[in-house]
Length: 194
Image 1 (cartoon, rainbow, N blue to C red):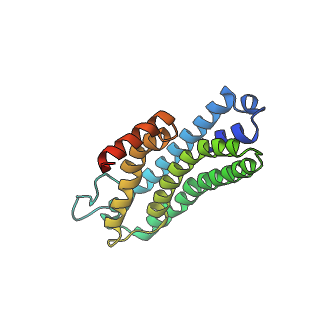
Image 2: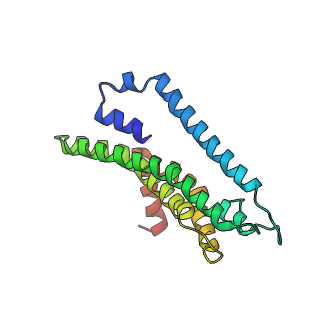
Image 3: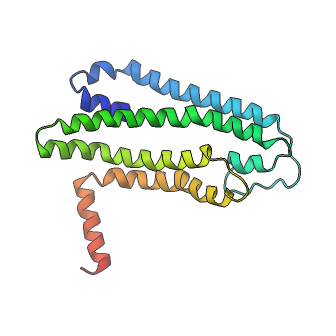
């Protein structure tokens, strides 16, 4: 979406030429193939670990950090592998999003009318909010090594990117809608007694 916003705002006349069906398909295929390959490599490493002791994961879903806590094998090598894969798979897309939004903000600042700047910024602000919430939690969970003390904190952070971000996603995007904003203001006034 960041690339789409970048093209739509920074290159509006060339948007349909650049973002054709072929480009859209190639972006989707790249994401799916890259995600599948990383998952397969991680799964191969997981299959080589030996597990002993309790077979109960201390988490509300089967995440990597609590799963690795159950192993009797050397955890440091696997945690290093997770970090090595997390760097390109999390930080590179995040950096590309940030770079595209820097270009978008530079273009927005070049818009002469205040109304045009406000409208263009409101188009991007909702996506930037969701991206920041999502990547902030992912970086915290997968790039900061977990130990037994941080597993409880990891559960709370995982709850943010698994439940809270998708829950707030439609709300954040709907707040741009004028009708939704009016309904929310009325609801807020009724609740506060104004």
